[in-house]
Length: 259
View: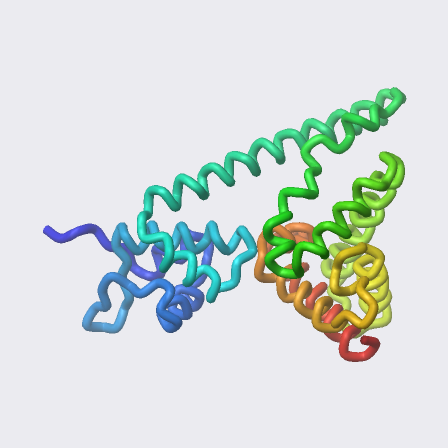
């Protein structure tokens, strides 16, 4: 009896993806099926499942499909690669645990009318976690400028900035759930706020004189949909990527008209 295989439908359901995505991965040579039945149906064995797990983990790190292909080609050993992924996931787990405790402490202090301990409010909010990714995308100067800007702010200024981000995310979600069109006045007002926020962060291409603001804004919109880490900021109550897609579409309309 041969090795166990799973159908494309089974794998799509288990992995939380779609058959269409898996077929696309096959078309570009990223994840070929282990076998194809006489009826044309794709099937996947244990090796293919491990490769898919690595692909999905790399997607969560924000890598594009060409970059993922390069990584998988360089990292021939499955176990060492997965151990590296596991180490990163544990770091993320620790960071999220600290964030949860930090926010819960703030809620408890506000509810009980107690004073806020500024030094405890930002535990887990480590902006340096994306250092390598930022430097890879936009250069070392971009990270250095944004890092210097962040560290120069007081606790109150950091709290105000994070509140601004939270308010913007909340308003985007509300607009998406209301079903308004991306090119509506309300959506475009949100897009304007979003771009003003982006251009106010030193080190980003949007803040640099003569920078490609339009390309940066449109690219970020696409990343909100492709990268679950960022798309989660705009997730509606029904889940999925609809909220992120709404933000992307509204930003593209704004960029085409204003940038």
